[in-house]
Amino acid sequence: MQLISFEHNGKTSFGLLTENGVIDAGARLSSDFVDLRSVLMAGRLDDLRDLIHSDANVDFEEADINYLPVIPNPSKVLCVGINYLSHIKETGRDIPKYPVLFTRFPDSIVGHNTPLIRPKVSTDFDYEGELAVIIGKRARHVSQSEAMSYVAGYSCFNEGSIRDFQMHTIQFTAGKNFYKSGSFGPCMVTADDQPDPNAFHLQTRLNGQILQDAPVSDLCFNIPQLIEYCSSWTPLEPGDVIVSGTPGGVGRVRKPPIWMKPGDTVEIDIKGVGLLRNTITDEGQ
Image (cartoon, rainbow, N blue to C red; front, side):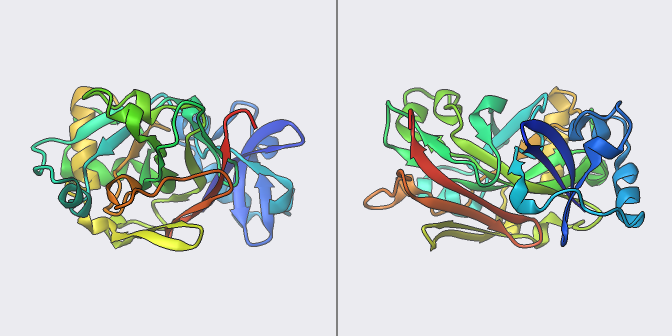
């Protein structure tokens, strides 16, 4: 299944993306389900599958909706830095002993086809294509061998980074949380459709130029390891997101650096998951 969150005529909802259009699950299911996160929290993804099997007519054309981040209101977005071997090599860092973690705030993230905002205070706006892992049930002290059973699905993520602010201190928070600087979408592909994340291949394109191109199997800490580690120190709740890291090829390390600028189009393409596209605009425009 391809699950989305969206806005239509000023009303937010969630549903299924099909070849024919969008099925509005928010309008069809019980009022107990106000968003995709509430469906995950109730363990009721089968209710969405039932809508497909019921031969429900689509409610909207895809062109008629505005995409929201797949999970607009996660309780946690945990991002992993320095986690592809190719990225570790290009930065000259040592392989970390433990995952390098930081968080993103929900208001720093937009959906598919929504502009990313380059802030007034910096032009060092970098792309980071990443695989997002969406948790489907509460996970606490989960072992690697059990970890994949806690995954609801996968999506694409652009972990847009303001590099000079990121480098102000050893803490990444400021540079990773500028308003509407990252994106998440277009959809969540459920794990039963794509059970092996190591089979995914990620590509980032800026104005059609391939700048990142790597298999997810190049991760230093793989998805089961990340779930085991994160669940050892915090409960992972349904709808929480682990953004698993970016491959080599980021703009900051290139000579000269490549920064995203107004008018650019950036695409994160993960075969089997989706294609996340955003344009770039300046703050205040």
